[in-house]
Image (cartoon, rainbow, N blue to C red; front, side, top):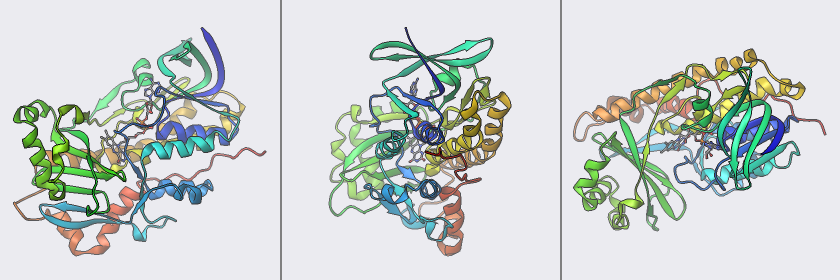
Length: 405
Ligand SMILES: Cc1cc2nc3c(=O)[nH]c(=O)nc-3n(C[C@H](O)[C@H](O)[C@H](O)COP(=O)(O)OP(=O)(O)OC[C@H]3O[C@@H](n4cnc5c(N)ncnc54)[C@H](O)[C@@H]3O)c2cc1C
């Protein structure tokens, strides 16, 4: 079996893993990012790049080039709630360079980041490397075993980072204790074509406890229909025409093309989870991003949070990693820094799910929920959700060193 030695191995090339790989390589730390897929093209990924992430791009000197990639800018989030189109968050007053959310398919974002990371000789991205197990010695994690197209390899490292998402192999193999926060909803994920007179931006439609989200992917809409957990079989039993009608009732402009959904294979079930590890680390291993705390799509903040974890990890560990292994105390410092913002956001997501699942978000047939009414009536209040969504609690700044050439 091939054996490879590196300073840090990052499992997973999602937003957390790729940002961390970039920052460590930038600091002169030898790093390998192992990604199990052959590319980044997967539908379930979110598309939102928040003002705080754009601020990091600015700090890294990448913002101008980043904004030259095809994207859309949303300065105000609007939702259609019980038939009323209402503004919910106003990003225009944020204390950041970019006062908008950039909508960019996540594969473009990851390609951009990995393209820049590759400029550092210390960065190695290995696609189609699927980590199957951790290597340990005397209770310490010393590397990972991975399946690759060339066969099995062992990658030994001073530090293993688990950035392999909600179904992380790293956290499973490390036997970390997971705290689950019951989520009463799931999401059905599908594509519907876009046509000329369609509204320009991504929209959320809330209607008496029902929720439809539309993400603009240039020539099609990526649609997310929120359903009560476990209800898919019942929805299927009612038949496709009933489901098509369900969507068309919420977003009427889609009525002329919902029949594109003519087979259940075009509709994918994504189970939504919210959970968090009690301990994010043990000797030689640290989990970050969804691997440490699976986020629901509510508020579209999971990507941002994963990136913030990566920045904090690099800030706290890069300098030490340049010299050699890091201690368990060093790893615990990352959890200490990132756990509080995670808890706060997850609490908010649990609250939102309960409101949606119980239909409490809509008190009557046409009435607006009180909180939404407040946002509609007092524009200044829209800066609060904008700050929470756009920047989030405890935003990170890049403090990890840049290698001197
Ligand atoms: C339906 C849905 C929609 C969402 N929409 C949004 C949104 O619009 N905005 C937002 O901010 N958040 C959204 N989220 C949440 C967001 O997707 C996550 O919070 C975010 O992707 C976490 O980033 P990550 O890098 O930690 O993990 P991930 O993005 O899950 O990346 C993990 C990576 O690890 C790889 N991997 C997994 N296992 C292995 C292995 N064994 N070996 C090697 N590689 C492996 C995976 O292929 C993947 O590339 C959504 C979530 C869901 C479920």
